[in-house]
Image (cartoon, rainbow, N blue to C red; front, side, top):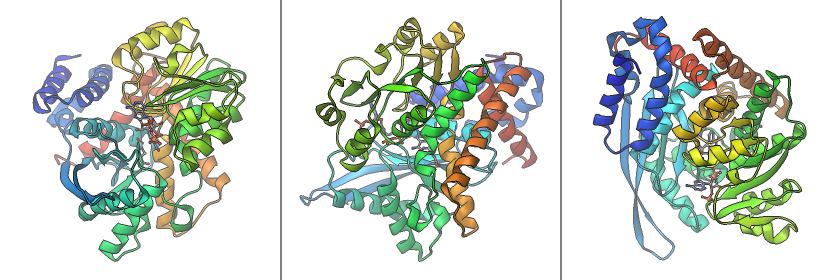
Length: 445
Ligand code: NDP
Ligand code: 2IT
């Protein structure tokens, strides 16, 4: 990294001690900025880089709640309002026991550039809690969401900060969060949250959007080589919202997804994933991947290793950060994998990214390839503001156009800065310059 950029990184490490994921996300963006700053040195003026790595506001709060047995629990809630240059803070809420300030900061930081890539006037933020929803009853989930929103409500609003889902937060949780927000504010501000139910302000295609967008991005990358997804074997990790709809879109485009996973292991189904069964197990029954294997002859559950051990043409990591390391990348490459599109946020470690890039395969970082979710959230906000509702085809066509535009912006920026085909540089440079130009226009704030 150039000196000016390296200094910013060192400051981030010193000021945010122990927050390894945040350091990792910042480093990846700053490394991409070398050619950008070399060409346009004014982006380093007026401490712009120092400002962009510092959240505008960090809210940390107590979330007390009572379980079914009457025991009181205390979790920690977060909302990091990172950057509002382009619009209201926008980004999901994650409920997972691993949540801490560093994880929410890394997610919020990524979100700034991802949201800029969508070109929809949304700033970057993220939130969540170190609450583990696994094994909790419906009543416990509802009371937790109500307590979480009791504090969060004072910080958010349709023009201020608009949360949505992420790991552990889906349509059910957004419902409980919205119900409590409405009650506290006495206002039906539909645009305060996205990922809502279709009967109360949600958008068609939002549920599918992240997974669909990830696969559309993979297809766009392949198209630059004159290829398609038809007949390609695909490894998917995760079995949640993003993974399920990545599998659906991959199948629609003629590919054959053969794996998925959760924290108990991964499933290999060489005949191709039975999507109806997977949805039944995961969306309806909220079960584990073993429940799929028990009902699907030929499928097997593997409890050691990762889906990346299975030879495939395409890998779609759709579970969580750093779930694909350098060894996994080497295994994938040996097995013939030539395309990686990230549905999760930062699923590939720096060593894995380095391996993909030196092998010259098509590799898309999550902030580009998984932007379809937040893009469709912005479409939901647009419908809410207009008190209108589009049909599926309309929302889906807009999502498809946005993903194509993000792909082309990455390609153009990678070329502009001298590294054609480098989607990491392309995504970071295109996202950064959009945010930086507006921060300059707004003065030192
Ligand atoms: P879900 O909660 O719906 O699903 C998460 C899946 O990943 C589950 O199968 C879960 O298994 C697995 N998983 C989560 N954490 C771990 C872990 N530490 N180790 C192993 N498996 C794990 O979340 P989403 O599908 O919404 O999110 C998946 C990824 O996509 C995240 O990185 C998220 O940030 C990203 N993303 C999500 C968007 C969205 O619109 N929802 C938009 C853009 C990115 P288990 O149940 O066993 O924990
Ligand atoms: O990581 C992400 O982009 C999300 N979890 C979706 C955010 C949103 O506001 O829809």
